Image (cartoon, rainbow, N blue to C red; front, side, top):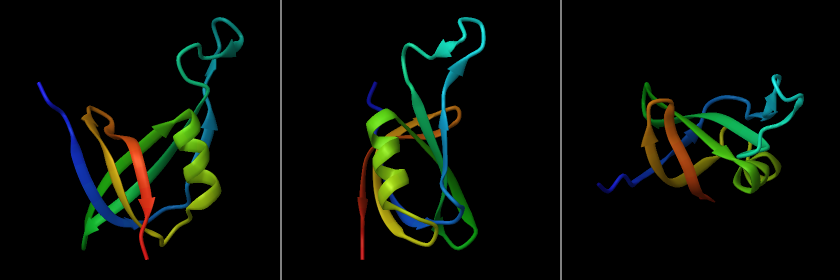
Length: 90
């Protein structure tokens, strides 16, 4: 089954960057070390929750901010859209 989506819109919130910590093992998660969360307004009043891990999360945190118009490629999950690629548009 193919699960691929392409969206473009404006970042509506301050980008939230977090490290993933496993309290049971007292260490960073083995699968991912960081996550970034953002709300993408694709049309007036329509918000999609996007998130990305590790290198993509770091790039988003360093290069994007609230109000930027972006294009993302990702896959739909129960928690929103997992971002696999992102581009900052004009």
